[in-house]
Amino acid sequence: MALQKHDQVPETALAWHRDGRGVALATVVETWGSAPRAVGAQLAIGGDAALAGSVSGGCVEGAVAVEALEALEDGRCRLLEYGVSSDEAFAVGLACGGTIRVMVEPVGIGAGWDPALLERLVAERTARRAVGVLVQTAADGHAWTRRLVGPDAAPIAFGTERSGWTDAAHSAFLGLHMPPLRLAVVGAAHAAQPLALMAEAAGYDVTVIDPREAFATADRFPDIALSHDWPDAALAAHGLDRRTAVVTLSHDPKIDEPALMVALASEAFYVGALGSTRTHAKRAERLRAAGLDSTTIDRLDAPLGLPIGARTPAEIAISALAQMTERLRKPETRPGRLRGAEALAAALP
Image (cartoon, rainbow, N blue to C red):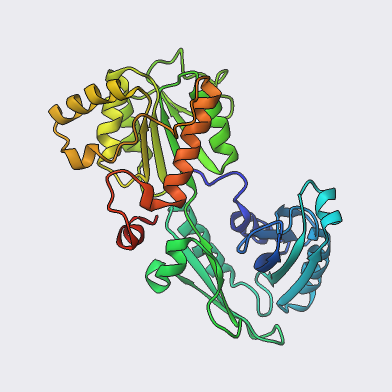
């Protein structure tokens, strides 16, 4: 499965380095106020001043690029601080400004990135493994070091998915690279169209699965990955991990329930099914008869979505994505889970 289209900064940096263009990586390491981008956001700056990614939504990219080009000349890493005024933020479509601190590291030069380490990072991301880059900084910009670490080395940071400084002296920064979120939509129903678009905007890689080829078409789902395999086989090939959500929308038990059998037995953080409470009660009986136990069935979010009174396909999509977001960001709300701190720690993706 490909990475999100907008989250290709390390991959782009590696490609530019291999092409001999020269490249530096800029990373947001600290923010104050209403900063445009979160800690960990990255920007690749090519030796030809090409840009990929963002550290401020457009407010300070130009200034960061200038520093990056200088870093490519002298091989020295930099820690930079920028104030983004509300007027500057508004000019690029943001509500308000703030202050950000940015780390600039050349690739393959001086104290910058070892290209072999960047290759390892890209390989970990491609394999959908959570990984962090621990950067040890130095005041003069010449003695910086970096290494890759896994969740066992920083369970709290990975559990909360928050990049940041690991020490009070602000000399070691941990930048997290979490696997992209994915959404498998089973059933190319009307609600699947707005849901696919909204989920992509929210950062999900979306795949629509429906063996009925007349429903799952490129005309109805432009630029969305489509599968016409039977849902259980499609999901097995897709792969379901703790960064994956599954929703079933076909209203046809022959299509939805094979998918639910696979999804509920997986680590998917969200499994939701369209249908009324009465429909779900009958569905639960069939799933139980098919061999699922009550604990597994209780993981299912059904009826699908938050209870906002949704009626139209777009409103159903909104309620589904809102519930998906709640289950992702507040794992203690997931059905079939114990509440409290223990459940929260165990459920975090």
